[in-house]
Image 1 (tube, rainbow, N blue to C red):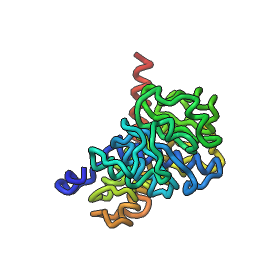
Image 2: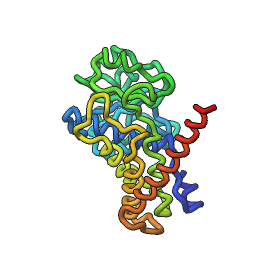
Image 3: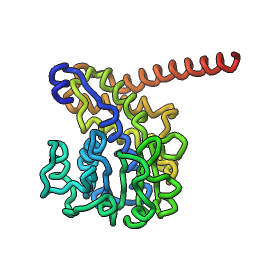
Image 4: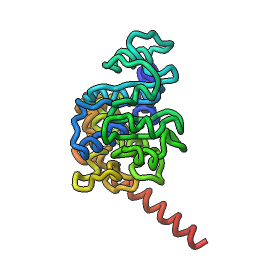
Length: 279
């Protein structure tokens, strides 16, 4: 991706990479706020060392999370092991401060949060029970999560998110990429940095007012009228602040344009729905 950006001179966003990582960072921020926890004191297990997992770890470390344990097909990534891919070696050298080895079950023991970016059905209730009290479980594999929300709650999870629309707290990259792309396009950004994604994550989290935060309401929905304008404007301002913008829109212009475009799309959908009902 870095080579492509350098060659093309335009921003490239891997939606299932930093799009996912941005929404995970937003959801965890609100979960920690709701539970009164300090991210610097948290230990997060990330299951999955692919594109989404690597970006999520990068975002969590940049957010100041105390410790991250990454689990891949070979178990917990550890600093004293040489891996077959540069990104796995980077993950190993920058995570697992406790120098733990073993399986997913070993990684989850004592951790305060779990982020699943892997495959369905690999987390048991016993694994959740082995975590720190009132853990956070983001079980994001689709269509079958690593553990179903009912089972995670029964095992003591305080907050559960999935990638599915039919459960509360849908943690899906659709919350991020429309606003991220609009902000990048409207500034003609050279690239979208990690810091820009962190700013977007804060905007996503802020779209749920503190008074509305609840265990089943830590993330906005794609239907929120304020979400995409806020994320687009925040992205634009972050791009400008990072000196990555080719043009600098006036304050509020990106939000206004995004809201207008969102309204056009919503009106088209309403018209299509009405035509369908008449048919």
